[in-house]
Image 1 (cartoon, rainbow, N blue to C red):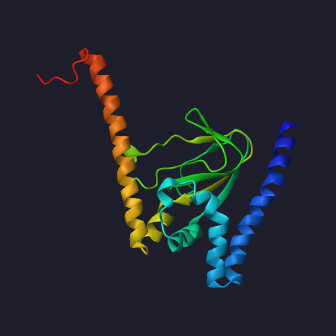
Image 2: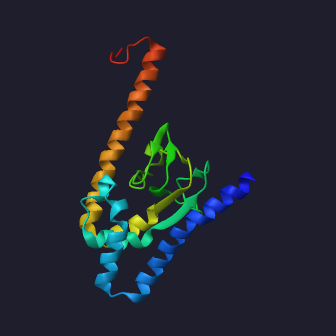
Image 3: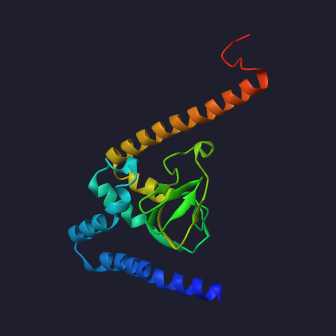
Amino acid sequence: KDIKVQVRDYVRRTKQMEKRKAYFALIDTSLSRKLRGDLRIFITAGAFNQVWWLQECERPFLEELSTHLTREAFATSERIPNYDEQGEWRMCIIAAGTASRAGGILTVGAWWGDIILSSRALRDSREAKALGYCEVISLPRSGLEATMASYPQAADLVRQAGLRLATSRAMIIIGAYARQWEARHGGNAGTVT
């Protein structure tokens, strides 16, 4: 009985997502270039505005970047992986529902996935888990790289953001290592002998 209820709820909720997917196919075949760009920005602005390193990027870059987005739905208690079916690293943005990740609650607009970091060691690889029905918009790293190739100004902004994030993550790792060292050696991490 529980599985029937869960499947019915999932199918009912994914109807809206399937409509949105169909809209993108219609946009590409039916609209002029300007209207296509305007509508893509209108549809994806809510998601892109939440990502701090995309906020200063130029509009044409965001329009093209939106062509690489995919939508996926997850049922209650399902894991939301940080990678797609091909194993490629991706950024995930919650479009509907709630999830949990690393002890925090994620709601609409929340995002994760360090696709701007090339070093796997610095990426936060913790997955999210759907707390109820959850719809996720995802952007693969390859989609970001392909779009950056055509927009050098936005590419520079994204690289600078990647450097800031990498520096921050490296400092966290160094701090954790220093605390471990201090615990093993009696608190003399700052002295050289």
